[in-house]
Image 1 (cartoon, helix red, strand yellow):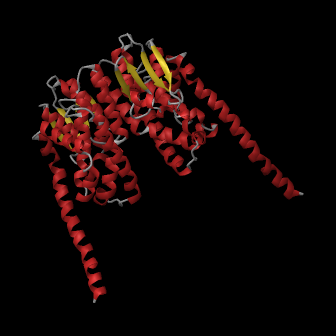
Image 2 (image 1 turned 90 degrees about the vertical axis):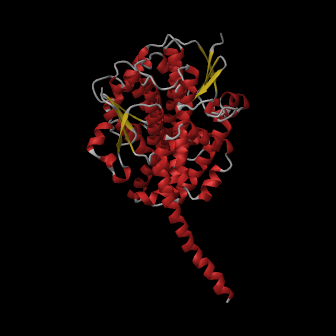
Image 3 (image 1 turned 90 degrees about the horizontal axis):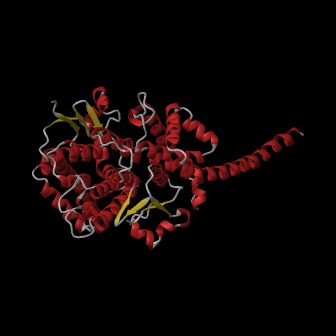
Length: 251
Length: 251
């Protein structure tokens, strides 16, 4: 039988969720890198895999599928080795996971993705930063994090919906939030700082999926380091005239 | 056993999808009207059902659920009388339906809802029409309809993904598109006119769910009639000065 193929860019948060899921569950797969920054998602070859030209996408035998939530659900059902907690067979628990995933698409995803794009990533993609868009996205992002803190993490469970073990919703949402690592530390602290349960839950999800979680996020950690070097250089060059000006004026 | 409760406003397209689904499948349920225009979704009673204060929501025994896609999937799995074509037990077909539903949330829904809000509905909700938002939404809406026409309805099936019978995705998407009935006829023709397969598919879905489809949409048809009376009155009052001006200038 043909090996499962996963078309992914590790810079894409839903790609990371699918890759980590496969690795944690011992699914035998081949990772096919589609680098968005090199516009590889626009090639005719990839268009034949996903007409929407987005990652992640999978090919399992003759079956093609895209949309990360649909992929996670498919993998959880199609591969018998996957533990039940990822996508429980219990209909009610499954339905509630579904409602978190639907909520994610309409709230956390647009908030987080647009905020990071418009405060950090745009220049790397040859686009302009947009302060207005960033301000609007920040509201959606902060409100989404409050919802996770106060509604989805209500109760004593370590995971969403009071779960004792992670589901595909935990993995999907935590991978979304991980892109905040790319922010300036000040911004990240302002946004994530007040949400203590969210922070614990991120740690729990990391721990439950080690070492694959960090391995798949490595590309993000590297970019974070590169960005913070740039940020501190920019901060230095901004500081200089500030120091010079008062000195001059005092003389 | 307690009867299933469905909290819905028939003016909400996902509410209509859930109500039609229950009726078509002979599910014994009680419809509890939550009128958005009377702000009934903001009551403490409804907040206890759905902390997000949105319709539709269901209560089945002690189990509460919201997000219409999650509800449709739950009902299809929890009620044994539901025919398999609505949410097939085959894992691959199920996954593809899931990917259509995910796509719906991120494309057709924001396009259609924002366009109708900003060209027709806003004044009824005490809000201003926003031409800029309408223009942006129109692009998303038209591109979404093209996607349905050329990708989801590709092939010879009557329904999405080549289906011979409707799934929950057909019902959910057609109910979304039905709100275009409220548009000025000129706008509706411009937007829906070029999409012949979409039009046939709407008819097929209506036929497959008669008489419940029209019964549940009746509130929308009534509002449509009311709005077209208003529109023709406005057109008359706009016409008058136009007729007068050339007459005057000719004299």
